[in-house]
Image 1 (cartoon, helix red, strand yellow):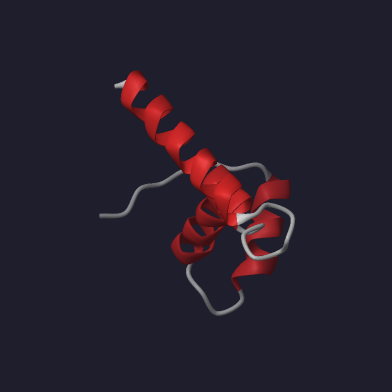
Image 2 (image 1 turned 30 degrees about the vertical axis):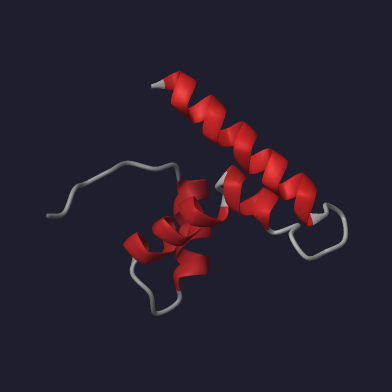
Length: 70
């Protein structure tokens, strides 16, 4: 099902440049995924910035925080 949304001229221009042959839906979905904090943090894995032990500690912390927030 399609929905109509309103965006500023500036946002429309950016989306149009990014979309190329893709649909606006595909562009917006990819932007939503790319901007996820989890994805940004996990992108450091394997960069020797955070070691595997620290990653596991972060995951445990997220899990504990997630369980408390429900």
